[in-house]
Image (cartoon, rainbow over the protein chains, first blue to last red):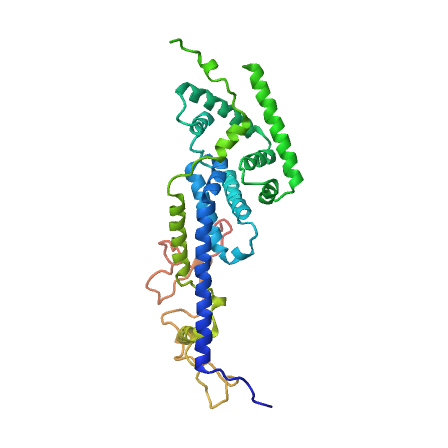
Length: 200
Length: 168
């Protein structure tokens, strides 16, 4: 039996360990920098997506923080993600929907009228502000009455940076399904607005 | 200056797209990105702390000294328990059996009582009569009446002819 096994010298082992350590440290630094860049780029849009569902400032912020914590846990997979925007919005979307399902506490703005007043710009006159907030409140109520799937598509369609394909990726459905649901949602809202117009 | 009614001043109707646009353009709270970074830094610090390994994750080299110590302790506990059990068992055993002769093992063992059994004194023999004509017979040696027997204060029975009318 030949004894031609390779004997590693101490210097070789130290060099190997040193190179491994360096590459791991570099990878850790790269991941940290990548996550920081994601936070700077997407924290605002993630907050808006979360807020459109929760209508609660604290809950929306908490959902965004939880999103980036999950990104940190899966930082080794960052290189495999093609569209970070869709990936991140899908994470925060699932978080807020899951929390809404299990929510026992009421939202900060229990009253839709109160929430609608926050949406209207403060630089308009008081009368305009009151009328606009009243109309927005009515629309928000009609949006809440929509079926769940149509409502989700409608809310995501409000974000101009999201295409139909990206919305389909977030909701894990097809583009045709997104278009169909969007069409039904808008038609239902139009009918509700028409009914309100005839009444008033 | 005429005051216009509010309805005429604001004629523009709000469309659903306007509401949705306002929802999508809500300003985030100030310092949001900084707070996220702070939380991520805390999470990284927690991750960097040494993690308690599960028992199946521990490598042999690091576990050997601990395993050896644990085994020694376990042996000491088991040995101590066995020793306690043995001593307890021996204390409850009957005294060792004395062989009458030099026999082998327990086959020839005969239990020998430490002392002979002496019958109690002052008792009547078992063959003595205990009753005479239905009445208890008190033996001469008895100084006290035996327990459970009620003997009326009557003179000792005399021998007489049995009269059918006396028998009850």
